[in-house]
Length: 451
Image (cartoon, rainbow, N blue to C red; front, side, top):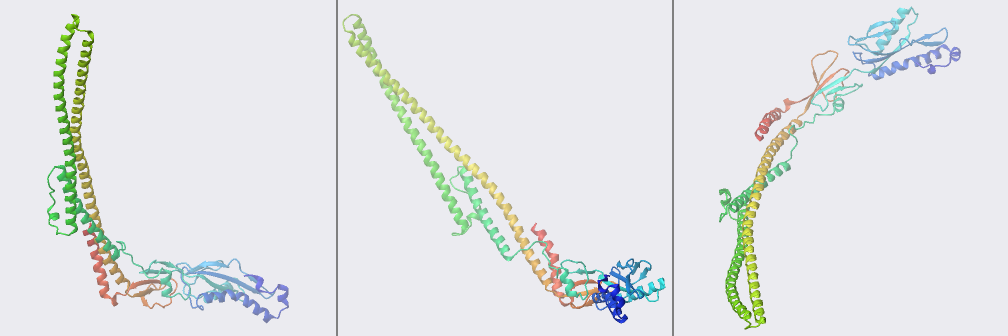
């Protein structure tokens, strides 16, 4: 207690007794009044875990002053046995007493212990009430701090409100389900396209004259996407086969041309050899005549030049023939390389197609599972919504009596240490509860089947 509430000692001595008494009563009764207000007009009866603040003062009429009993003043917590321990007094039974009753008991007990003519004035103020507990279908079941006038509705709001049930399988919408279905159809068409491509590549790899498509592709009706895929692969097969054939034919034509050129050169070399022999024989005869001085040397020299030119021309023909034969070999090698490269390219493309087929099958399986889960989740979500539409009911167990729970309205006032349980009012919606239970039981089965 602060002495600021009272006049100075010298002033108090000059005041009339009645005025000074009014001032003192006002100063020491403030905490008591405050305590009564916090406890709901002194209707609250103390319970275990209640925190109270005790203040004790004594009026000294001889000096016109009041004295605080500081050793007793302070905060106390009501024990589970319903007692508090105050210096000088010891254990006091406070359970089920109001703050006014406890204040009176403290004053009377101190009077008896000290032998005072008048009991000191005690004030008791509740500074913290026992916790209340909210459980059941609320978002955050927990213990909450009580305050006077707390209603059931307010307590539920402090616990996060009504439980917002979430789907353990995740939330899916109808749009997602449609998306998965469309993705599944796209993958089915992609598998048909890859199957047609694989058939074409196998036909090209084995040098077949036509493509052997799977029966499900051949049976597709005219104008359908699958039939368009088949026609496209046939067109591509024909175009690639024609391109290879034209390239091979060009190589064959070049080889024929070079072969003919070699034959002509061979004939020319035979003719050239004959002419060189004739010229050489003539040169031998002239050489003899030159040796006998019958002919001049100039005639011999001219004939030697002619023979040399003819032999040089033959060498040119030999070189040309060798070059033509080399080109024939290159042409044949190019034709073989063309066929080999075609096989290599087709083999690599076939391998990539097989990998893409397996990857698409895996994606299709995954999408199918997602589609099944989405369908089950939407069904579960509808069941949860039907549960959330059920009304709630409220049951309170008073912590002090530990008796049976009592059903109360939403606006009912709670008491400290109460246990509030929020339940679904299944009696008003039996059908909805049965639907929710059935959907909950079937949901794991749908998830297992999607696996």
